[in-house]
Amino acid sequence: MIGRTGGVLLIAALLTARPASAFSGVQQSSETQPATVRDQKQVTPPEGKKGEDDDLGRIPNAPSPAEPDSGPAASRHGNQRVYVESVFTSSFDRGHLVVPSPQTTSSTWQVRVFVDVRREWHVTPRFTLTFSDRANVRAQNDLAFVSRENVINDWREGFFSWEAFDNWYVDAGRINLKSGVALGYNPTDFFKTRSVVEPLSADPSVLREDRLGTLMVRGQSLWTRGALTVAFAPAVAHATPIYSDTSLPSIDPSFDRTNARTRLLVKATVNAAADFSPEVLVYHEGDRTRLGVNVTRAIGQRVVAYAEWAGGAQADMVDDALAYGRQTRALPVGAPSPLPADSGSAFRHDLSLGGSFSTAPKLTLNLEYHFHQAGFDKRDWERWFAAGEGALGASGAAKELWWIRSYALDRQEPLTRQSVFARADWVDAFIRHLELTGFVNMDVYDRSSVAQLAVDYFASNTWTVGVQASANVGKARSDFGSLPQRGSVLFKVARYF
Image 1 (cartoon, rainbow, N blue to C red):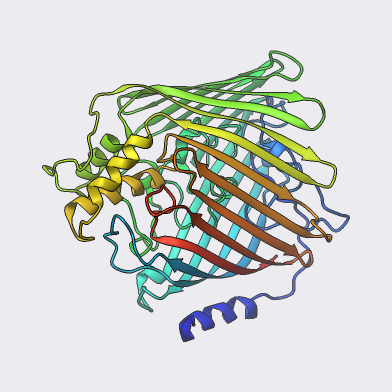
Image 2 (tube, helix red, strand yellow):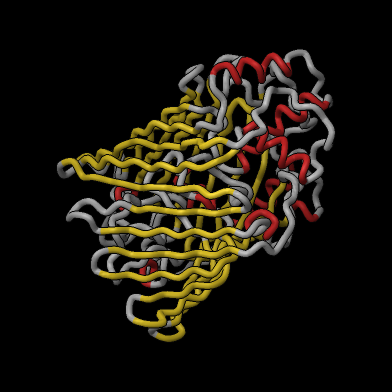
């Protein structure tokens, strides 16, 4: 039972959905090509849902002068929407964990009602304002009502775009800057860290769009043979510990998550051939510099192969996580590491290698291999379980072991070194306006996996209903089988304006 509070929130979203004229815009990522229109009515999908070719559209060729990389012209007529959504989530926990979790309570149900706004204003032909925000009201079994934790505002983007000269753009403000060609893991998406606040979906394609932008200044130049982007993000806040779902700031820009360190990104795209436009990136943060490359190649009419690589000097996941915990005082400064850690930096590689296949019945399939050298291999997993087995949830060892996993999740990086990712998106599945989206992410070492299936029905131009189920599957001593949550089911209703 969700209780009186949850019921009131669920009903409130439906009562506030007033009739409105049909929304004419079609959702479009700021880096993708325009979404495929499902029919003459232009049904607009909800957050993260795309047309049949949108995933292929994420594979970047060199942007044309009319479509700069996430710049003003790229989203000039799309990605504008306002909607109200009501969501009920029920979660299922595991009864026994090999390594006890230090978290004493868990959310078995949650109700959220939120207003989501993405808008652009064209002040002049060369000057555009962009704003993206989500205001949440939530209730859950382990959260007091009424308190500041019941209201959360996620200010995702707010920036201006100025075309100073033809094909020369300057953007300033809070920008969700995305990079990469893969779907499951993006090694070159350097601004993804700590940007996801409270996700409704585990689908990486959804998380990529629904996250906090970074306060930055960005310049872009486009020409016939390529494009150049330079982004500078200053440090305006101090680093803070990882937030739990009951400690999220209420009304706060959360610059501690996105602008705790000064960062610089330079990336260039070169039109080397008609269907080959590699992208090269250089990223600097603190005392570390990383390099990146994105390449794609069409194979026939329906297959696109792609690769995304990043590399640079860094410590392993254990040392990075514990160092961050001690820096933010979330962990005792002098506490010994529960796992062997390599404190020295070494050149480490990250790779996503995959392909996309589209079929005539509006079905798109993606298959990828992910390699994260700083993550856990089979021996590291054995050490993790051995260090925590039999420990108390309140012990320092258990806290540090789970902190390492939370750190990887907060940075949106795989904890394991090797994994396989598969995703399918089927538009107009079985009947018109029904979309099925599912993915599986499997740890190569122990064959455990996280799986999710979402079903959305676009009832009209203004109404969408959906259900989503996810599960962490595996043995007790496995990557996903050792997580406290066994699975969850989500129901949603959305009203577009």
